[in-house]
Image (tube, rainbow, N blue to C red; front, side, top):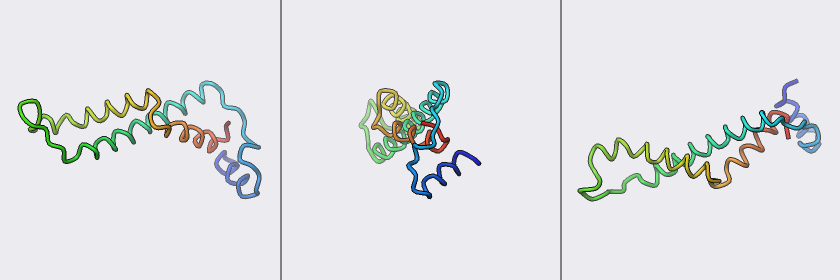
Length: 105
């Protein structure tokens, strides 16, 4: 039986999801947290990209093909920076759910 089916079975039977979870090792927790933070950074980058869509920057410090080509690099860097400094709390929620799906606490 997989961790996902164990979690699903526990939820379907009315048991609390945390009742059958085993503690995650520090290495497992670190991998999950890193993945969740990466997901939050990607999400934030996408949101920043949408936020900057349609904004025009006047010459001589902006505009042109160069700015549009490198804007995605800027939004990626902003997303990574924000996620690494706590972000919006998305990584924490994603971490908890990823651990539960693997049968870990």
